[in-house]
Every structure is written in structure tokens, then in C-alpha cells.
Length: 91
Image (cartoon, rainbow, N blue to C red; front, side, top):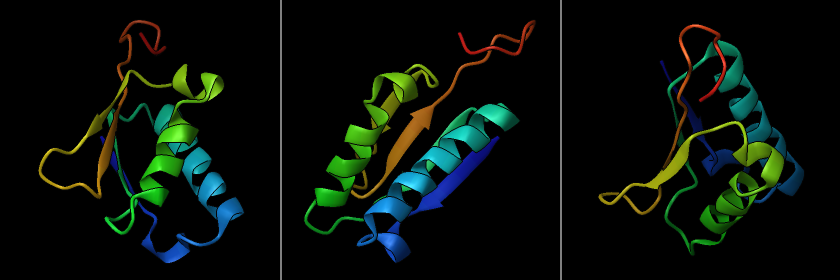
């Protein structure tokens, strides 16, 4: 399952960005999604840096497997999750 979060509409509302990011990560964990696509957009790169800082927080980082920067589209990130099928927990 793949989830998608487009941050274009809330790019200048700090609290909303953090809530949206936390919400999509929590949804991915609840639904055992394997991939979350986050679109901060190209712009100056400030929003992408903010998203990467959010994902680098210890408690958030513990929830996912890895982050991939899209080599074809600077304004897109992929957050990969890996699940242990027998227990449903992240490996």
C-alpha cells in the first residue's frame, strides 16, 4: 500500500506541516503501508529540508525503514516501511 502527502497547500503553516507529517506517518504505521510519498515541491528547498529534519527525529526515525530522495524529481521524497509478516511489527 502506498500513501501520499502533498504539502503544496500548507507550505507556509508550520504547525500544520508537522501535524500533516505526523498524521501520514501514523497512518502508514496503522495501515502497515510499505511506502509514503511526500511532495514538498521544488521551490527553494526549505520545505524539503524541514521534512527531512522531521523524519530525522529519533522517535519518527524508529517508525520507518529508510528515506529515498527521488533522483528524477527534486520535489519528492519516499519513506519506505518494512513489516515483519508474523508479528506485524516493523523490522
